Length: 145
Image (cartoon, rainbow, N blue to C red; front, side, top):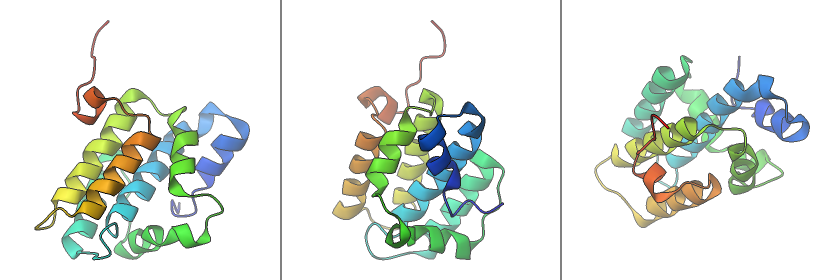
């Protein structure tokens, strides 16, 4: 299965079907993390390795470096910007999934030697698009009611 064409996001936005929820999480995670590798226009191999490791851990998918780099460049082929897809997708993601995406994104940004403004700007745009609260950004999840 190739995650890089983002069909689950498109299908979920069109139909609202819950059956695509797990695929949606995988695709959003891939899209966000892959794009993070080039947020500062300097794709580091350590960032790509971090993305591969996180995707394997979070989704069970072993995504190749080539697929990650393709996904990082996929905005050229999209009809809507990342923020619009994330805004649409966030309604179908659980709080835990949104926190996992933000936590993984922070890990990718921290994986190379320095954090640049463009990376923090990318994080902020993703967090805003996912409608993350400050507590979610901090990784705080309510575990019981």
